[in-house]
Length: 375
Ligand SMILES: [Zn+2]
Image (cartoon, rainbow, N blue to C red; front, side, top):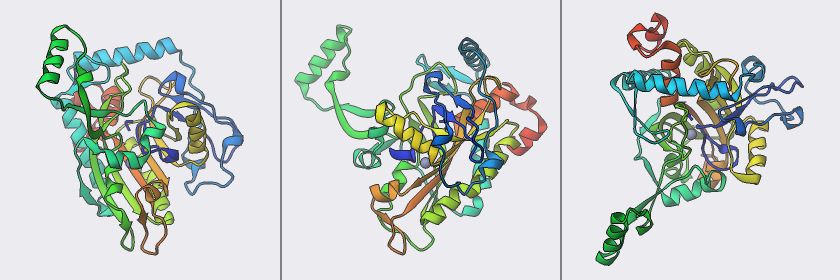
């Protein structure tokens, strides 16, 4: 959502390593855009859903050709963009891949993206919720995230020993050894997707009409990379609806086109594709195929490194169906299992895409883009 992802099953959310695009109403095998070359997969007609999704995919979904750029060119483009962002002090290098300090210019744009996105969804009249960057272990457990994305998850550890263990830790440290082995689980995880803490608050019966939330928070995914579009820690700003199967689907479907138009108004070239998240392992490959086939998650992708290279996902619209309703025991006013959907802006990725296309000097950006963002 910048980045991959809500929970297990096809409920993957946000972030997003790989995206594959299909056309729902043709038999053509279509293009694949993968943020990482090894993540790419090809979607064949046999994978396509038997029934057309409610979104008019024919009007929205990519007809782009398969990326033809070389892997060497992609690496070079990433290195050039990263060097420019650091040289121009848009980002500050923290010495580890995917971790940066943010400058005043960066914050100015990110706040503008956040404000514009918030204003665009004011009619939803959401309840506002903000969470810490950590999620409780029981809630994390209930999302099933560890089943699908163990390699992206991260736990918080803390020292819980006594004086003797502390002396051992200090001795190891003085000897230049790793000392984290003296830490123990602190029963909190780093939040992998901004909307996950919401569902734990909704166990029980929803009111008539369900609930709508504005959630903006930290996400962490352990995937260190020198691609500046792939951060380990970032922010997702989401509009989350929990309600009936129909209202959840409508929340997702009715916003796909407006989201694309909003991003285009910033001066970004945007394509909409079904997501193909990097589910872990052999079983994960099946989950990823199901996710694409069921068109549960759409990603908004933009060509940060050239139109002939894989495009990068900067936002997503996700239908989780009953995944979180079942996991957290949420029921609708009429007693059915609740369904949920979220619309997510990857704030850093959108901001970085803007710096990519418009340059490092915000005041020199095209007037239309600055107007759209009230910059
Ligand atoms: Zn979400």
